[in-house]
Image 1: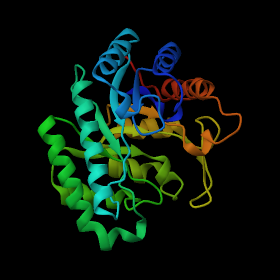
Image 2: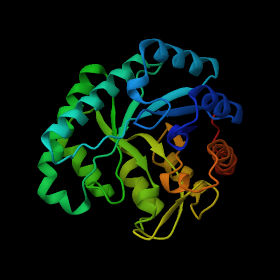
Image 3: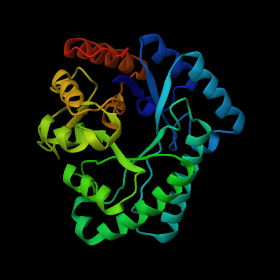
Length: 281
C-alpha cells in the first residue's frame, strides 16, 4: 500500500504549491480535486494546463491514483442530471488525459440523495450508474463510487448491492471508512465488505456518532489507523490510502491546509511504520 493525500482539503492552494508541499512531506501520490471552488476546477483545466500538471506530477514523483470529481448523480430535475452527467463524463475524459504508467486515475464521486430514498430510487440509481459506467468503460476508466453518511448509499451492504445490480467491471468503490466509523461499524465489518471492491480510499479522523459526529484531521480523533491498515492488508488491498480533510475542518477560522497535510503525514506515516507495512513494496 502507498500513502496519498487528497487536495479536497486544499481548495484555494495553487497546484504548484500543493504538489511541492506534499512531495516534500513524503507522500507517494495525490488525488486532485476538480469540483467548483477548487484551484484545479475542471473548466479551468485547458490542454496546456493539463500537460503542465502532468509534468509537475512527474517532477515531484507523485502518482495520481484518483481524481475527486464528486457530482450528484441523483438530481431530481432531469436537466440538472443531464448537466451533472456531462460533467462527470468530462471528468472521465480528463482521467484519460492524465493517465499514468498504471492507466488512468479512478474517478471518485458520490451519489447524493438520502438514505430513505434507497428502495424508491434504487432502480434509478442503477440506471444512472450504468450509463456513467458504460461511458467510463469505453475510455478505460474506473468509477469509484463513495458511500457517504446521509446519502442514498450509506452502508457497505448498499454499496455491494449496487455493484452487483449494475454488473459492470468499471464500477468500484472509493472506500472512505470514516463514514462507516461514525455510524458504528467496526473496522473489520466495513473492511471485510468493501476492501475487495475498492480502487481508492479516503481516511479522516472522527469523533462521535452520526448525526452528532465530527470529522477531524488525522491524529485529532479516535480512529485506530494501525488496526485499519493491518485489516486492509489482510483483506488484500494494495492501492493508495489517501487522506482527506473534511469541509467540517476547513470551516475552522484557524484552518491552514498546509499544516493539516503536515500533521496528516506525520500521523499516517507513523501508522504505516507501526503496522509493519513497507510503502516501498
